[in-house]
Length: 468
Image (cartoon, rainbow, N blue to C red):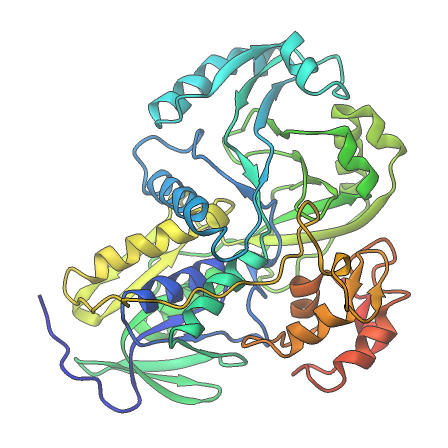
């Protein structure tokens, strides 16, 4: 095992590039293992890329490729999330899932889905007939032909989880630098000298978790990229909270070769989500929605749950997944250059992040090992999930600022004063749910801006507060 000697002043053990869910999980794991970690994020806030938009499902891995690294990381991540979520005050909305068959082709695939699940060790997955599907989901279109029950698929809060991972890393010594783009660098045989938009940073090891820019980071630092990011856009529609009474399970389609398909699910915030699409594009920054696609998603949701046709749509959004030319995770491990890329992590990244982080440390410890923290600090993150007690239900909250989402002034002020405060309006929304309800900030935006003042790195105006 290699020894990298005593830590030099200003030399980090590990520089994690990218503040998405994988980067946050990696920073946490390496910090808890005793490494001195710095996380570098080019945006004003974490979760500014692919991680800000997803379907928020905690996956069992029942339909993952058998024997794959993706499956191993998903199941390790699932297990670790279940083990730590209560200590970090993270929610778990227990729902289960049903893979619903809507035609003869879908129905013919159900036995293979069950067989794949059992091969993947998810033994409680079973086929159910039409009568049981409708007994479990009475509002479902009676045209359903049957399905597969996956009892242990659940819904989590996709924003609080990575926030908790990085908050715990920081509470135990990790550092975070935002607005800090890595523009270049060189490896001198012992450490990396990284050029960033905020000056030079030295680290013995680099872990590339740059998501949609993973190949760009490789090109800048290694001179060539081992993968090509091909952004895949997913559009979503969010139905009003009243729609949550219509569905209990996550409703999954029979997956297709290119995509898992359109999902209908409750969210941790009390809404119903329908999506995503799967659209290739070149733009890595902007995920725009379009009217025709959104109308098609609304129609798809109503086809499965007819009562959705009478429910208003609260919000629409789109996210980008860092797909590559290959479906597998793209791991590039070069011990001689103290380099590790964790790339090509698409829709399973929220579940798999903790497992990917454990896998990364297992690779790293083959040549470097630290002393794990004996008594790590375990901070709580504020709860913003609808099915658990909210701040407005406790005395002394001061004022309801966002009436759609019942966000209090105390919650907004606590987020602004936290160890990892929001860097922009998107970050404030993800920490509190302010401006994310029916009015999309139309009524509360001015008050949110007034409370935030100049606390955000990106100045907040009334107009910006209700931009999606």
